[in-house]
Image (cartoon, rainbow, N blue to C red; front, side, top):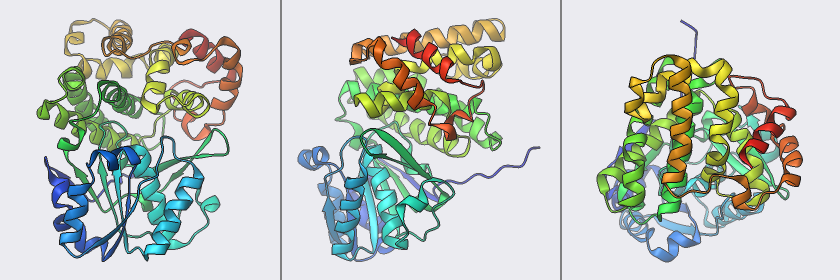
Length: 386
């Protein structure tokens, strides 16, 4: 068997309302002064208050940084670090979607180690140590609570990543009650994002693709495929919400160890340049990248097709099942009410060449794709998605 390494968050709590007892779960680990990283929308909605009250009840003094935006910038990250320094932070909580969790991860690293962010970009460059870190996701999509990756926007629209086991949190708290108020559009986009994580992890050419990631991808797709439409259209169903949150986490564990590929690489210019949400960016190119990959990966997509869409077990042959899987994924986006064409999010034909050039910068992702992607290929995929 091929050697591999598998890293994940050491402690995971899956329980409705668990965030309301965050102090009991994690207060001792976090210490007396806690940098609490979130976004202004969650603060306005009051979703943070039970967690903050719980930390205070256990003697903690949370300093709230609630200025995280979508696709967080380097400037935002450094402001969070400054807030942590001013508070004398002994631990960090990330509370929110992937953006807040990503900022919390790197804030914990920079506060704990004092290392230069520019030396930490890339794979296994961050050395640590970091401050104690607890992550509480409020969306079911990124799986950031179990991934060693943080993505930050630098300059105008370039995204850079830090990937290191050092930034895996100590505890992930999965509270499905926090996701009950998510609007249908966000539920749909984040849910498809999680499905992409599982699909790309399963088919990844990474030398660390491993049996654990494949097993997790299978189970993630079963949970996500069975529950995404109910979560979108019956948003108060706590069982469906919990299944989506768990499926997202399992997909996160899968791709954290068997990394994603061209879907994400081609999605990044869409999000970075046109400010399209990450999950929707992935969905816009997903079927077109999979069709491009099919000559080399049909057998892999055929192996997971029935996990997401059980009726596809009746399809004969790898090619037929793969083709049906791709069509089902495209149809799912339509059923969920998502935009399905680049033109629908304001992208025109004149934008595609620049996007293809930008996608080629994502070498850490493209190397994992089951079929090599050239700039000409990327342009053709974007044209198909237009």
